[in-house]
Length: 103
Image (cartoon, rainbow, N blue to C red; front, side, top):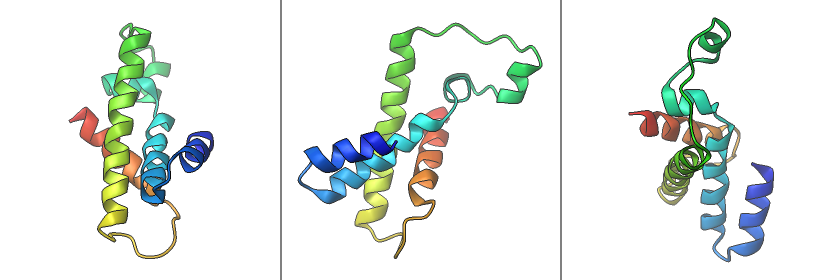
């Protein structure tokens, strides 16, 4: 997440866009089984069958969810939903977008 945020800050002139990229990168911290199939990590340990997923499907799913994360994070910045500080806000936007993707 930090690497993506740094690359966004270096390559994008608009700082709001760079922050949106950083917010979208938080989606990448979710577990692939949870994002794609809704399977909790504790269920995997209990012997649940995890469906096979191709690399293209995995990358596409995270790209779509990350784009949603960037849009929500950018909107929250632009609309001043969060005033002052950054603690937990990007992670919250990433969480919301994982929920939106699963819905």
